[in-house]
Image (cartoon, rainbow, N blue to C red; front, side, top):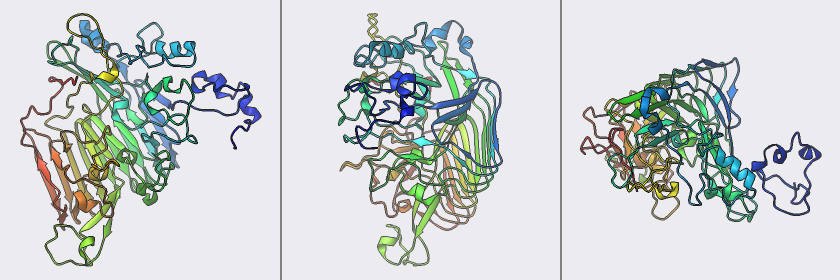
Length: 553
């Protein structure tokens, strides 16, 4: 539609006009008053959920998620389990730099601003709370065809021909798993340590405004974040049975290597089993939620070559998260590894010492592997063919978009703003957290994180993703087993053939633990191009458990 062309008559009907039905979604840009265009100012998502009841989604054909949806069992509140300490585990939100909770002071209409603020300010109309659910129902996904999801990746727009606001990632664990705790940090009033479920809440949204568009008030429209995907967030088991293929089957979204300004999106699956916890004043750990995840795919996971080719954020490959329980997956190919053949050096592993064999591949291009996010859980993934994992991260140390307020210990009640710090972290990994990978008849790559770097000359790994670096390394749980029974293992630069954008200074390291174990076995060969994979020799206290909290200032 050319600029300044009036929209169709149906858009003026109050029954269809989004500006009439949802005023907060539209901004008055002046003019004669005739509606010449709709300008969505924030993304949202839909929800299909139960509490303690089971949820079954069964189809003889395909199950396809075409927009952001949270389909999950939520469980029931367990706030009373904390007794007299309940209030300490449900802290008020921190204020933004303008003194509001959601940064709405520059909004176009005061009544709309007040409506947003009322949802999170702790008043009578506030819907915000820290949820610690348990007793949730089971979720069953069973399809006789294919299963696809919907994931958006973070994107900041520029250009007057673009939308008013960029999109936010929908797959970050920090969208729905929030945390608090001051630990032994000096100078602040103590806050009890806990991690909880954010089913859906508003956060300030100004940082993704398109600077090329001069429309007042857009920066003050809050953003809704919460869980999207399939899951059991308040206890319960998640079972997925797919007769066909799952995940990335076809390209979705406009981002390509030639058009990176388009919005990145995919058919990736987000599958999650949630769990929450509270550390009482007596040091008791109250754990709620958790369950087992069992995924069985008759075909392949993420088989679409065209869909995998333009993945700029590894979370778009899908996320498998279990914070407390067991994770089992069986499939044909889990992602894929395209092998490179040749008899000259550029087509061979940089550290290959044998004579080059044009019929033996020492390099591969791995892609399409999901991101694993584990708490006190064990993941066993097996594939009949290739098996690729994009990476992993610690759920207690990922970036979160909001924080509780905290006060100076002088008792003056002055809260820090969310932008000035106050984000606590602690590890949800335990000595028993483990990843076990088995490729029965193909090749295997346990990480492709090395290739996810920024566009600057320093080639630094991209921050604030589920799998981003911590402590200058890509850190894995303390137990890792990777077995290619009848093939080869490709790691580091040898798994990224054709992609010169990597920084191999960031090695892969297993977290310190008394139960640490590293096993990499191949029926053929192990190719890594000199890439380093190590077990940490640091103190067992180097990664703080929930009983030891760290609060960056």
